[in-house]
Image (cartoon, rainbow, N blue to C red; front, side):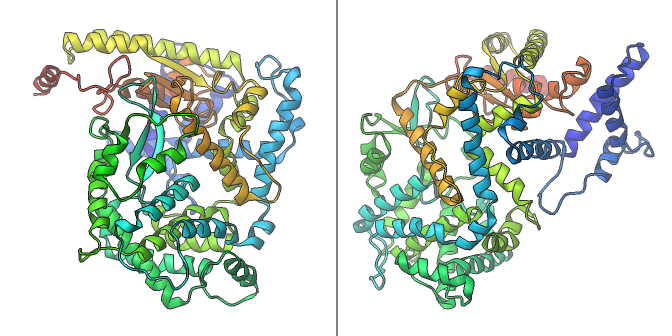
Length: 624
């Protein structure tokens, strides 16, 4: 992250000196503020010829220690926190407070939609307030997740005292029911499904069958005994707090709800054994999972199969019934499913099907307990503070290094953003960016950068003629969207946003239920796309996000209003400062389309293996 400060300091400092030597110095309040921050970032006591990094970043490093609640710090995290503070002020105020100071020419104020806008605002404020209602959240403890656990156990046909033998194909029907339920809840399990753009036919959506995410950040974690020992202790503490036979007044409601949902109250020995089976089970999943770098190869992960082929190769579940449950009744199942990790599914099938004879074979009990703990970990941030703190102090600290929880208000702003990103982004834009005049200014800014990049490509001697021609054609066809969505949805229109989030029902004092409503709405919306034409105007980020992205499927870059803020950008700064700040970010997104992972996409945005071997040879010769 310090590299971001270095880039900002270098570009801005050099252009400031250039302006001074040409008698074109900007002396406005905004320019003086930026100049002051640049000087604070530099360590003027360091000789740049001895330690250039310390010279350019030393001052910034001194004033930016890593907070106990964050795993890292940098210019991006600084701006993210500033944006979250702005959003918090919005959510703690009223709709009328929001309208104060909004530019009437922004394109965001429409009297005919004002009452709908007020209703939209009150909806997200109710969500935020339910999150902030810690009295209710703490009183309920972990009990809101008990019906979800009970539903999965019911799908598996579980009953206390039932015989738990090793898994066999006889259990495939029950496992199918469990996979349907877990994926519907948005909980990681043995496989994951999603509906996304078909890389070889980007006008259509496809169903993707993937290996699941793991509870720990990567498969390498499971190879470290000391780390796993800490993880085990953390899991025992968390599971005990939720399912354990722990005495005390705070446990009365918990025990009552466990009994009501026909869930077992577990003793210490049972919990330790349960956690050991969970870790053993997930370690096996980690060992057969593909590493992250292999999943980045778009050609390697594109493996279309018919549903019949899935049944033949991976008979651990009824794939037809699973997909038929997810796909809307009025839609047909597609001819193919894109399998991203065939080797994982093969190894998983071999392990489960042969559990009766393999020494490392697993039991139905281990599978059931794996699902229970995955539900717990998936919902841990939605329940009471005591259990959240226990998780953070053990497992959370192990995963991200943070030793303190961020303020509850910060967590609730982030949760509201995750639930209503485009809607909350509308209000951020109105207060912190502007509107149509500012968006069009950024659009012209991007066009200038594209023109400059085309000029450089024409002069590049490291590309052969054919590849250069293709690259220039791709730049010509590249589109861009900036600041906020104006089509799908139209963030300027309260009616458009109401329709976009119409499937979400929000209730007072029901934070867990509200989150579940959001998840179910998103799940339904995702699968309803299966027979629709791909909408190229969809945004994959929120307007207030401090980031940017390039879409290889659409050959499009998107620059949200969240990053169009100081120190990266300001409408009142000279263009040379903005080119050194946000210009570097936009330039990165423009050029990232030519990297080794994205070059498999042609200028019509279709996945292809057309990268010419002759160009690879040509570039290697140039590098020799």
